[in-house]
Length: 130
Image (cartoon, rainbow, N blue to C red; front, side, top):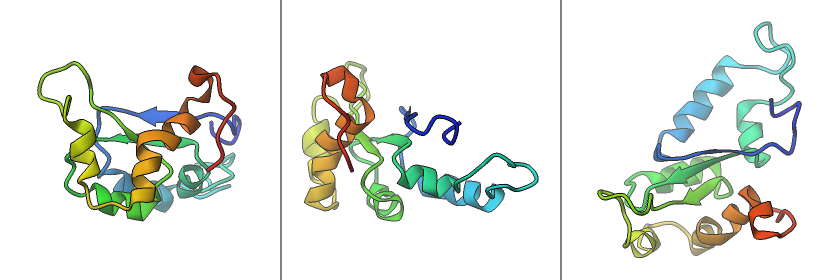
């Protein structure tokens, strides 16, 4: 799909993010461009992620999210609170996430830039480059 529609962006929500490195590793192991089972695939799954086609939300208190961000880069992560449901990080999601041991530059992307890249039309803004 991503090769047929290079501007397509898909976001994964309400699933945490720490599993993403494992998923992408397994997809890379199983799917090769031009392979017998994927003759039309032009990019490795990890390249699709790196090119900004796939985004994933993270929960405020995820224990291993720093590892996931290091493994896959800081351009795919979206901040969510699942407001207004009980049992979520709301209303403390921002301070809890800000305390995570991730670089400040990643926090800026998490709270702002990545969302603009994922949904630029909702803001009436042109797409923001990585």
